[in-house]
Length: 354
Ligand code: CUA
Image (cartoon, rainbow, N blue to C red; front, side, top):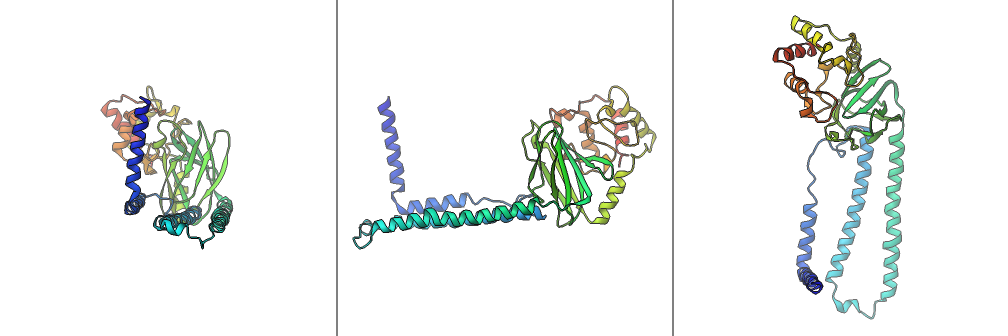
């Protein structure tokens, strides 16, 4: 049995040996391998498509490291090809002092080159860390973000309101973030704007983000936090100062009153058995002061539902209310068995919360 295995092993080795015996085969193999690893596509959001000073710094370090690695890889490949094509007779040329050459090679390749490469990387890493850590935040815009399984509570303490899953910031302004978590460790990450920051229960970490241009930037949780970790996203909306201030003012308003009879019935449904939505959700200006779920005061102003996983429209909202466990199994919101008319009433009320 053992002998058989050894024989097999030797045969496999021989097959590999003969495969690589031809220099042409090796070159083709290397070219194919480098082509296969070059499959970087145009996926957004990308850390290599920075839209803010934090992400720009990270992208710069990435390119420096990539450039250096490519240069070292290229050099090693050139040496490999030279070694392959060097004939045996030359290798034993009596005029060449092999020992001296070896030592020179060892000092240059083993000491000098790593010192230069690591020195450059070290410089960029230290410089980048200093830039990325620089607080210099506008104290006027402080945002507290709290990670929950699996959504984001967003508070604007100076303006005294709470929202969820959508963060608005003024463009070209460094905004201070204070992040923590309610249950388990999460990580706040907007790839186009900055790096990641851990959100740890019982601890507040300070961070900042800044966007160079107006836009909607995708953010996600970057720390495995349970079965719905992949469905824990959010949006950062960067706006010109005027639009941002209008948004702040709108968010500070209490919730709109039910505007129709249908909405009024939905309002009553919201507070009564068996739904008791107010146990978990807050709606400013009403008696709903629940703290376990997202604040719904201006639900209609948000672009997405259920932490960035689906667009905020009537259809998705209806699906979410009826069976949130089907869409995001394990989340805290229970499924309901509302009748058709009841659902319409509840939707009519929730849609007034603009
Ligand atoms: Cu929160 Cu992963």
